[in-house]
Every structure is written in C-alpha cells, then in structure tokens.
Length: 138
Image (tube, rainbow, N blue to C red; front, side, top):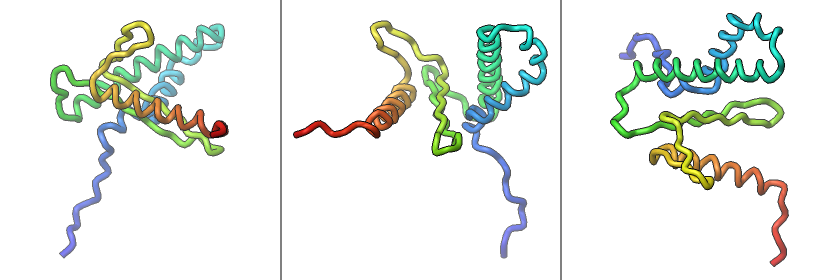
C-alpha cells in the first residue's frame, strides 16, 4: 500500500548559503535601499553592495545554524556553489565560516574542510588554465 503523505519540499540546509540565496538577499536589500545608489559613485555603489552581501551572508549563516546540527568547537565550514551562468559559463562562489586566516607570504590557515575546499578550487583553476595551453614538446 503506497503512502499518501505529501512529498517533502524541504531544501538542503546548505542551500541556504548558496549563491542564489545570497543573490536574492542582496537583491532584496537593493530594492529596499537602492534609491540611495543613484546618489553614489560607482565605487560607493560597489562598496554598498559588498556591505549588503556581507549582511546577507551573516543573516543566512544564522538561519542555517537554526536548521542544522550544531558545529563542534573548532570546526569550520566551506560551501562551494556552482551556478549555470549561460553561454557555457559557470559562476563559482565559496563561503568560509569562520573566515580564513591570512598567515602572510601567501599562506592561508583554515580548518580541514576549508583547506580541502581551497584545494578543490585551486584544482578547478588549474584545469581552466590548461584548456588553451598546448603540451610542451617531449
């Protein structure tokens, strides 16, 4: 006998921090506060949008924390989002919690999950760089 329970429409908790969610939040803040953008220079507009993005990321991180299991002390998070951008383009974004630590000399410190995410992004960057390159003669 088949169950007649409605199909769950729950989204994965990590989707809360997706680029689509962040972009929707920034768009909402721009709709609310956007009337001020016309009076700003291009640099000021970019700074305002960056500020709104940071606010949205913090808010969505708090929402995510409510709907997920607690993070153990000292643990971190890295969320990589891939979005189809049309014309065979893919937008890639990443969010780290807590923020990565700049150790100087090009060194970055993070949790094991964050370091793995950075390695994955670097590997993607290496693949992109190899597409148009020819193999050196043997």
